[in-house]
Length: 103
Image (tube, rainbow, N blue to C red):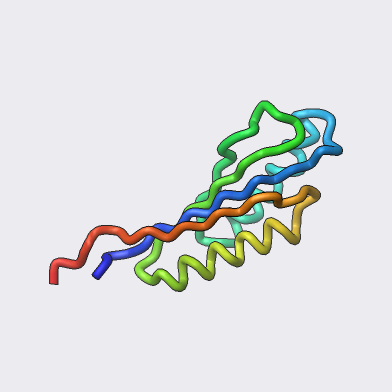
């Protein structure tokens, strides 16, 4: 039996109407901060940092309950989709077991 589970979520956010990195950061940074304060997750801007019209965001959480991990990441994905002024064009979720119980 696994000791716990790590869940990862990656989202590609696209905003082709944005014309500058400053404008993109003004859209992405607030949602990242809201997600971190609302959910028990860590969030990082992973790719597209030098592109003005897209970005990839990564989210991770850990728990001893795989279903809770999946549910939490689903809520985060829904929150991203509903809250931002961008389109979520790709989403990938994975849950991995951590170690094994010695019992």
